[in-house]
Image (cartoon, rainbow over the protein chains, first blue to last red):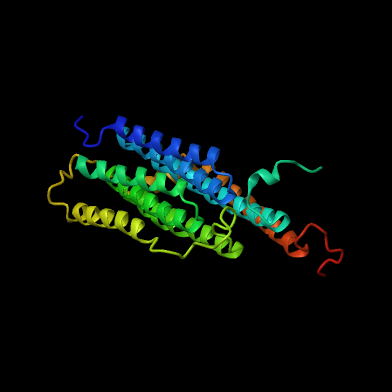
Length: 103
Length: 177
């Protein structure tokens, strides 16, 4: 099949974006940036699904992307509420300040 | 056709890298929006126009607005590291605007559509996606709606208790009733 965009290159792009997001999660200590990097990682996973769906010409990839979209929306709403909570208690968004659990 | 994919991929990688290395959260958001738009363009090139539209509307629209809302609520920007607020200092819009202009040119080139072999890319129409979504994936849709409902309840719970307490750690004793 003469597919115009090679499947491997889509996967490589998704892997690069995922690794950039992972590096952002590991390196940055700002909670906002950690959530941003999580968004990048989820988006890269969605790109992998879309690429696979385009490779085999099935709708399943797009359906899985819709699920990822729902997960990302839920995650970011809870995450940003927790960021507001963290800022409320500690006057900072440095996630190393929130390193201990209570209870 | 393949060149447009490479350019969009390059823009995506560059803007993502710039997004995670910015000091100011607002500048990072600008680059991240460009990254999401470039990935939306890649979705369009991969033959998924419905998902590309959803990427622009939900990711680059709704979720980024949520981020901006929180950042502006906290009004901190880069104050966590530097001390001064440099969210609005300097022409920070030039870099994202340049990358977005590249994407715009590319989108016009793709939308004009003359040199593209349209028969090579199999476009998966939104109708097929919807039929699959409400057919074999119906349970997944219900689970996703349940997840969103639980996120709504959780966010409401956090915001409700946030309103009852004073900053600085001590808990207000009276309850708003």
